[in-house]
Length: 240
Image (cartoon, rainbow, N blue to C red):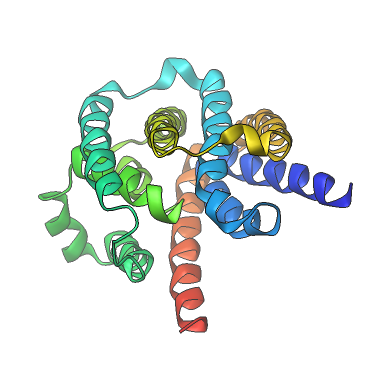
């Protein structure tokens, strides 16, 4: 009973955090899900939980989607899913989170790098990496969100677009695990608890986000991205 309540509360907290800043919730759930489900079920269960979180959050911001990003991102996600699924169990991915963390820090705080990388960045590449890597590590990092935060100024545009992009990535991941033969029905109770908590968190997060001024939102988002990147680097050093 205590485990069930804990999973529900963690899912609610994670989705509330994502409802305010569009990030952090996925990485939090990846960290705590091994306490509640076997290791082989973490990424599939995480994908369903995040699908619930992103889709329920999107309901509150449908009119604010930045559509030019969606086509390239979806195409990149499709290609990334196809390629990474073929080599799902044979990819050397231990250094991927650290590389993404360094990329985030440099793009946020080092002007020359940010200006140079903008010439190479594309939503196709963001979809390819975020969805493809997500098949293995669950939450590879807010790659698309970093790009959106540099291109858009309206927080509702950022929230709505990021939610839609991640929702599509979740669908690709779930489809891949179904194709690989994963039985989601074996975990119906943890999924029910996590999905219910995720939907509640979306409501709470959307209400809280509307109380934050746009300038404060962008500054807080930048610092949250920074903290998540630093946490990833610190965590990797801790476990070496």
